[in-house]
Length: 198
Image (cartoon, rainbow, N blue to C red; front, side, top):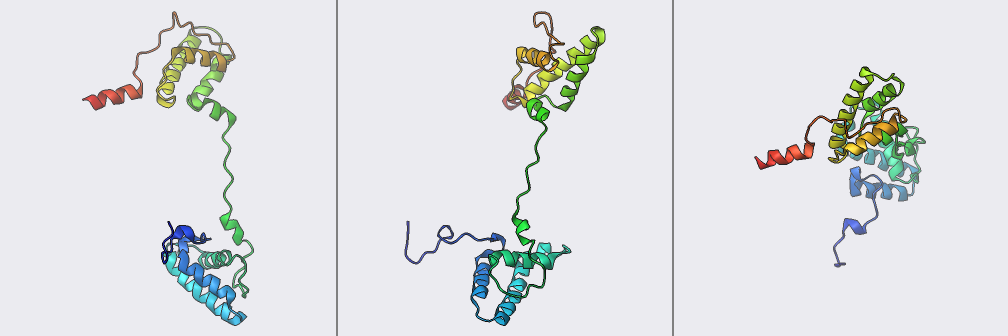
């Protein structure tokens, strides 16, 4: 819908730094078009004073003044020809997005079990067969089932736990689901439902 006389933000040019508002951007555009360097310089200093009122929370920063001039440089699209009181050549770095931190492969593969379970897998691989390994297998399998219920969208599949335990211990631990008994516990979703009913 296009109504004569109405000026919507969606129809306007996108702001380079929205935190300063459209009026400051208009002032910057006006300063670029001024004929003499002295006028542009005077106008730039007035704009920076106005910019200070827009971001007062930044005043405690040591490089506050530098930041304002960097922002002015960016808002002018590097077209404002004045004697800059600070070196603004590094201003473009302000808009650089940080690189995402890659997750370790194991974490993405086993994130629903967690780092401690992963360490238990490694321990089980090297343990000799016997009561101690059987006890650790019992506790590991039950914790895996709890973690699945919590982080695996409520899944509590015994077969998945047995398969994962065999897979991540390189086949060393094989659960016989006919004889192995898991502890009885309810999923977090089940407990939430019973609380709601009360």
